[in-house]
Length: 190
Image (tube, rainbow, N blue to C red; front, side, top):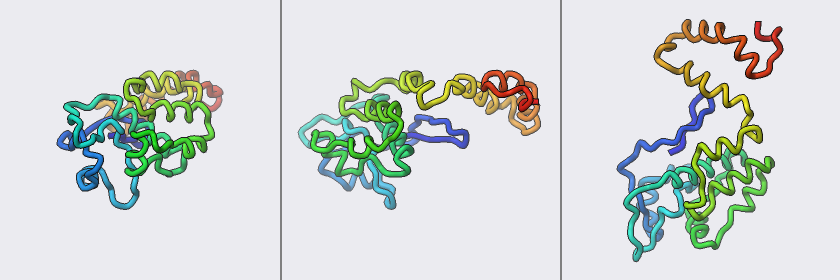
C-alpha cells in the first residue's frame, strides 16, 4: 500500500481491494497467501487488522492502517533495509509483548525516530493523517524546499507536459523561480 516513485514521492494506495481486511492471528496460511513475499520476511500490516477467533472481523480499513505501514517503510529506509517487524513480532506487539524500540532507537535523526514511533503506535486512533506528519516533518528531516518542489514536479508530470521538449522548456522558463525557491546562486541558474 506504500509506493515510492522515481522522484521519491510516497503514494498511499491499495490495488488489491480483494485482500482480506482482517486476518486471524492464528492463521499464518492466509497471511502468507496475501501478504508474504517469500524472500524478505516483514510484516507491515497494521496490528488492528489481526483478530482472535472470537472477535468480529473488520468491515472497513481506516487510513490509520496505511499510516502504520508507511511508518514501517520509513523506518526501514532509516534502518538501511532492516525490517521493523516480522509477523511473529507484530503479533506479539499487538499484545504488548514486543517493542520495536531496539530498532527505532538506531534511527539517528531524532525527528524521524519520533515520527516513526508515533506512526507505528498500537492505538490507531492516536495516529495522525499523512498530511499532518508531512507538515510536522518539514524543516526537520524533510527540507522546506518540498513546499515548492512537490507542486512543481506535480505540474511537470501532467499531460500538458507529456513530452521531453515541453518539460525542458518548462524548466528553462521556471529556472529563476527554481533558483529563488531553492536558494541557489543566480550564477548557477543561468
